[in-house]
Structures are given as structure tokens and as C-alpha cells.
Image (cartoon, rainbow over all chains, first blue to last red; front, top):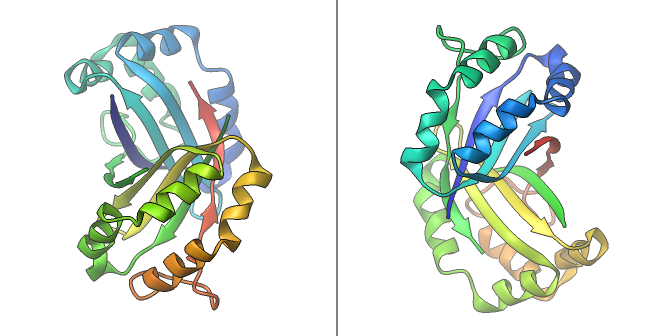
Length: 103
Length: 103
């Protein structure tokens, strides 16, 4: 099992909207993530900096990397682009973090 | 099971030292964390910002909160204080993050 973490940014006035949309995550999106090997997947917010911290456990990097190109993921990115920092293709600006400790 | 995440800061020139000390985490420290209900516990670094993100799974908040006062944890804080942002008692400056999504 591989542990991954990444950081993203949402707009400061969109904290509640980000949470609302995730509370109502599309079932097809949930299914797609699980089909690509996601186990645990949590996102946390730093309310001061509007930084998001994602933590997930996957089975395989190659399988997981397939998520980006799925139609449902593309649709999700377009849907979320108005409330967070994004790249020109509407994917979130995301920084991969480096694991430095494991209990 | 409760999922927690928090952010801390290390000094920009101490990334490797932080990792080295955690690679060699004192066995008594590891035992103490597990005895207080920690399951998964990972720390990730953003090399750009020198921000650390901790993710952990605990059984009980009250039991976990007992870690801070243990002699071994106090000793660890003093040991780590020269390479990270700390409070006057040498505890790391730590921001609790808010969970906004769970798969």
C-alpha cells in the first residue's frame, strides 16, 4: 500500500462551498476513485491559509494515475474550477508532498 | 477511529535533519505513541514552504491528549526545538486542520 499526500488551495470565501460539494460527492466519482485503487482518502483544510491537505492510500501508482483522464474526473475538475486555484485545463494546482515519517 | 491532521513548520535548511531524526525515532517514543492509541501516523513535507503535514488515526481523543505530558514526549520536543518553529515550552507550533472530505 502506498501513502500519498498533496496540497491544494481554495479561495478564502469558498470553504463552506468546498465542503458542501464534497458532502454531496457524485456517486460515480466515488466509484471511479475506488476502482482506481483508492482506499483511505481524506482532505483537510487549514482555515487560516485556505490550504487543503489531501491524504490517500492507493494500491498502485500506474493504476491511480489513470483517474485524471476519466470523463467523470474531467467533469469534476470543471465543476470545482470556480472555487479553487486551477491550471489552464481546470485541474487543481496541486503540490505533491514528501513523506518524512511513518509510525 | 478518529482521523486527525495538523500542520507544523521546520526551518528551510533542516529538511534532511528532520527526516534523519525521524528515521531514527527513539523506540520508547514509538511505543508511547502506540500505547496512546495511534494507528497510522505519517508526516509529509512540502519542500517549497517547509510546511509539515501530519496525518494520524487514533482511537480516542482523551487518551491521545495524554501524549503531551509524558516524559519521553517532553524530551523529544526539547530535542527537536532547534530545527522547527516552537512555542516557549518547546512544543511545536501546530495548527489543527479541519476534515472536509472522506471517501
